[in-house]
Length: 438
Image 1 (tube, rainbow, N blue to C red):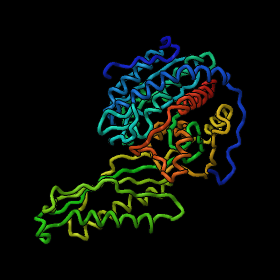
Image 2 (tube, helix red, strand yellow; image 1 turned 90 degrees about the vertical axis):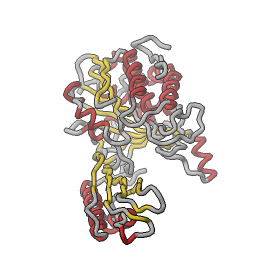
Image 3 (cartoon, rainbow, N blue to C red; image 1 turned 180 degrees about the horizontal axis):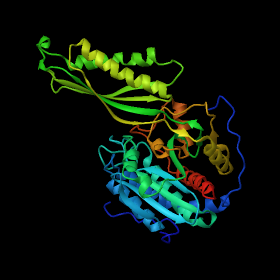
Image 4 (tube, rainbow, N blue to C red; image 1 turned 180 degrees about the vertical axis):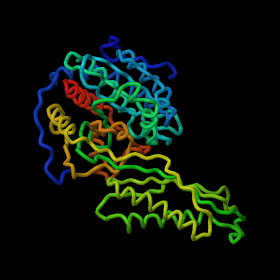
């Protein structure tokens, strides 16, 4: 345990690759000596590991993260933050004022995925259909550790910390919910926004990239409306399963024939629900789709193409028009070029060879998320990734030809260290570098 308001207190609630030249980096002076920050972080790591395991054992899915939010709120209040809970449902906002200066937003996510963990870890999820297989539990531990470290060295910076824990990132709905609940009117609009995400690269490896960093996402629900009948009398029906099956194949022609072959675009049907028995043709079939893209024009091609294909499929079957709903969406992450360079420059001094700065036209992530909602209106933002897998595990899997589990796999099992310590150091310096003044 540590002194409240200074070091982290873990008092758990009871029951609760480049194709162009990289950015040219300046060499700013560190606001606090690296040795001092390293020493502080080492004292925090045992408690952060405990916090991580506690959260991992008790995951909660989107908009149900009440216990998780309460654990984080407790930690932030003990550190001295002013905490508001229930923002955008289950989100929380923690504010710390430290004199005149800019406001820096640091984001973490609260939610887990609706899936069953299969890692066999001693601290594996105790919930049958909830698993932190994306890494948000690590993000939360790093978020709390960053807050504690910044307060330990608050004489080295001035400004305002705005630490937010958002619900429902996995459904790309939580950021919008917080903003709709007055995030930037009740708590002030930030000057900068920062976030990170772990992946299955070597633990401690940081990747930054200006410009497009990840894809846009549009999630659809398409309901094909037919006419039910006995399975032995298909002529008496309008079979929605046949319609939906045709659509699953035909919609891929949008990717292969309408989208520019040189540009990224994906249409995936992730859920197909229809019928209750072998001898019943149902009335409806419901599909869940996710569309991913980088370029706004490609995004439009995919979205309009999916809607048009669904309508045409129903028309060919002489069926009513399908119901097409966009259930959630978010733009691509677009890292501010100047802020990325500024962040990379400071992290290069503390990460060395573990920092990869990709060029603007380099590889971006095909995954998506809703962090871009927090940078709407011209707020400069930087989002980067942090490797979280033990290099020995990576080497073993490579030698055996075993695929390394990716985020969202039931086998995703990141290493706590050095992931947590590198994550805390990196986010601490990234925030501190912005809080030295405009």
